[in-house]
Amino acid sequence: MRLYSSVRVLAFLAAAALFAPGAVAQDKGAEAKYKFKKGETLKFDVTSFLEVDQTGTHESFLTNGNPRPMAWTVNGSFENKVIDVAEDGTATLERHVKSVDSSGHVETAAGLEKFKIAWSKEKDKTAPDEAKYTSLMERFAVNMIANPVKYMVYSDGQLGDMADAFMKNLVMRRGMMTWPVRGSEVTWPSIEVIAVPMLHDKIKIEFKNQVTGDAGRSGFKVRQINAPATLKESASAGFHQFELKYTVSGGAKAEFDLTNGRLYKLEIDLKIGFSGEAPVGDGKGAIKGTATYKETQVYKD
Image 1 (tube, rainbow, N blue to C red):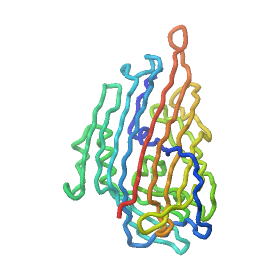
Image 2: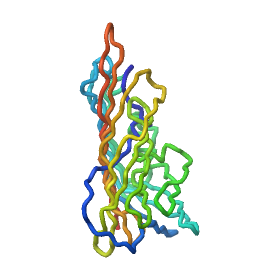
Image 3: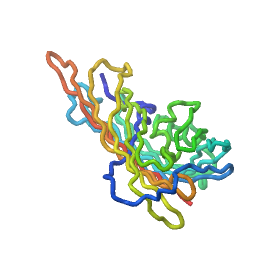
Image 4: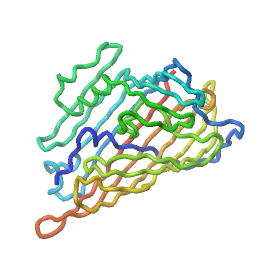
């Protein structure tokens, strides 16, 4: 078995950053609720980094003997156009890439593949031609540019169904700035479903959201939310026959704009660990590693 990633598997890693709750006052009269307006465009700047480290894995299970088979940076600016808003506040939006810079490396059976693509709507005008790119990772970025994503968001920040269910995964939602809120409630759980890079196994991550208080910004007020993450459950996707254990650490830190009814900032820092053993010759060899994902999204006026 070779533990290497496809573009789709690489894209399904999601997460957020762990911050201890603080004793900050909350405005009891203010409720957190998304207030989308038809015709408006919400802009967000994004930085993100994904890395897989398989140090400690038996060489028989490493692709070309590389214990660090993947590192991927994606930075960019995104525009979310509000197409329609229902009476109950549910909105239909469409994400567009304004600029993106995607680079890194991934170990494949054919060898180490380095990739890089940088594009700006203002400078380059038209979307790149996918036929000119052979790297799967570069073509992934081209598809982000060429294909705007239409999605539905409820007034509490929960996502509705999408034509492509994979787009609901957190990493795939770069620039689609939502995080669940609960009016004036101070604690609530939320769930994200992801697939582990290389292994393809599906896991559910539970975020324990806790309001730590309200704070003033320049001309508006934000509600601060900390959301430590834990493993909810895991299930084999059928791509390997090994018994693996998973761990999840990290969480999310969000700032919800109470004045304008939108997410102002989201910071992500997640680690997913996996471990197990598999037959090697007359014995067994270790399979272990950590996938790390970091991301920051910030509203841009």
